[in-house]
Every structure is written in C-alpha cells, then in structure tokens.
Length: 414
Image 1 (cartoon, rainbow, N blue to C red):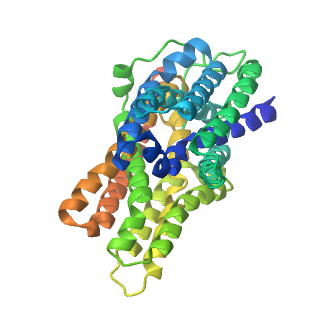
Image 2 (cartoon, rainbow, N blue to C red):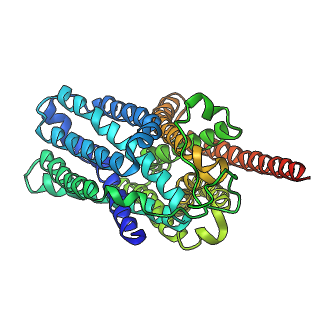
C-alpha cells in the first residue's frame, strides 16, 4: 500500500504542476483572441491566486471533515472542470469566472498533499515530489506550443490537460480508501512530543485548529515570514531575471531567455539531487544551505565584471540553491510544531507562499520603473537575508521550546 499510494502521489504532483504554467504559455495568443490587453493577465493571475489563498486556509478544516484522499480528488476535479471551462471560453469575463475554481482547487490539494507527505514519508520524497511538480510545470508549455503550432489553438491545450486531470480524478476517487492505510514515519529528531495512542502508535484524532490559535504558536509567524520571503524571491527571479540580463547587462535576448528558464530547471534538478541527501543532512541544513547558495548566486549576478558568463552562472546557482528550501520548510513543519497542528500551519504557509509570489514581482516592477533594473540583485538579496534570518530565528525558538518541555517533563517525573 505504501508504494502504491506513493506512486499515485508522485503522479498527483505532476498534475499539480501541469496547469500552473498554461496561462503564461498561452497568453500571448489568448489575449488577442479574447480581445483584451496583454496586461489583463495580471487580473487573471490575481483571481487564481486569491482562490488559492482562500482554499489553502480552508484546507485543514476540509481535510479533517472529508479526508485527504477525497479532498485531493475533488480539488483535482475542480481544476479539470476549470480547464475545460477555459477551453470553451469566448470572452475574458468567462475565463475570469473559471479562474476561481482553478485557484480554489489548486490551493486545497497543494496544502493537503504537502501535509500528508510531511507526516507519512521521508524528506527525500518531499524533495523528489516537488521535483515532479517542476516536471509538470515544464511539460504544459510544450503542450501549449504544440497546440498553437499545429493550428489547434490554445483551447486545445487546456482541453488536453483537462482530460489528464479528469482521468487522474477518477483514479483518485477509486483510491480514496488507500490514504488511511499508510503508517506515519518520524520526520526528524526535533519532533514536537504529543500524546500518542498506545496501541496504534499514532496521534489521537483532534478537532479543527482555528487560525487565531495557530498564529499564537511560538515560531509560526517566523516560518510564515521565511516562506513569504523565499516564494517572493523565487517568483521575482523567474519573472524579472531575463529582463534584467537584457536591459541592464546587455545580454543577448535569446541567451537571457535560455538562462532564465535554466533558473526553473535548476530548481527542478536541484530538488531531485537534494532528495539523495535530505534524510542524512536534515531539513535545517537544506534550508540554511539553500539560502546561502542563493546569496552566492545573487552576488555573482551583481558583480560588475565585463563578461556575462559570471552573471549567467550566478542565475543558475541561485536556481540550484532555491531547490530544497520549499520542500524542506514544508517537511519540517510537523517536527517543529507537532503533527496535530501541521496541516493548519501548512495551509497558512501555502497562503503566505502565494501571497509572496503574487505581490513581490509587481512591487519590484514598480520599484524598477522608478529606480532602474539595476535594483534586482539588491531586491533579491534583501529577500534572501530576510528568509535566512527568520529561519535561523525559528530554529532557536523551536530548540528553546523543546528544552523547556524536556525540563518540565523532568521536573514532573521528580
């Protein structure tokens, strides 16, 4: 059961990535057919992000009531329906209407799957699963390119991915009973102690954890800030790196585009490689090493040297450094805050992630319009520093809480 369900989760992570890059890949053609300006994509992505944030916050409550298997199936089904809706849309307002279930489906399944993997599987699988998300995100632009190049139209690409999502929905519905049969494994040596059932060895079932309760847990605000900073950094680099290379460093547009895509490919490859060492070195080392590697890459991008090779190498290095941070933060959540509260916290982390990804790129766009594109390395560097400082502070808070709890246990035993 363990291996069968794990294989299904890998497929589910590929499906998570498939819709994520469809809008960007097809929008240069879509906006003309829909009769709206190129900048209208911002409205569409904001609606999708809003739905994703809302469903991320509700994911823990829904999963406690329906179970992770059913929430995953329903969420993927909502995404499939939205993709078919996109494929039949003949006006921009119709696309905006379908963007809401598009985002709602993505947020709920993202939080539910990430929490399930953090509780039940080793750190290597968390990295490899997020690498498979990158595979899905890389495949869909090729589907869109083929559809447009073959004269089938952008709607055909949405329809094709919708069929894939619909097929996965059926498989997920048939496998709902599997999700409760996998025994949890220990996440790290820093696991927060909680009462356990003596016969089953698992935590007792508890109720929904309210948002206000979660936010009062020591360290939660720190991890939200660190996650916000990382996702803001990643999305800003993906959107603006090529423009920075062309407009400020005078790099050839084709070369800049290629290396801009290598940042995303570096994340995908880096997560695959990180999986081989994740269980040995632990989540903390992955997060710390990732931020430091990004910092080194940003420094290389900023160096005022005559050759472009240094800046291009720095961009690839930053992509590799970004790779393990997202999965490591997610995987460390049950260890840092306890298994009972992990889903609620991961849901809020997803919301913080999407908020950072949504807000940071346009903020930089506004700043660069006022001050110049030279600001990009400083902007990224500030986000790296913020993420590193908050994550290190989180480690101290968790260690202090663990030490205080151990002291209290010793006192009670005496």
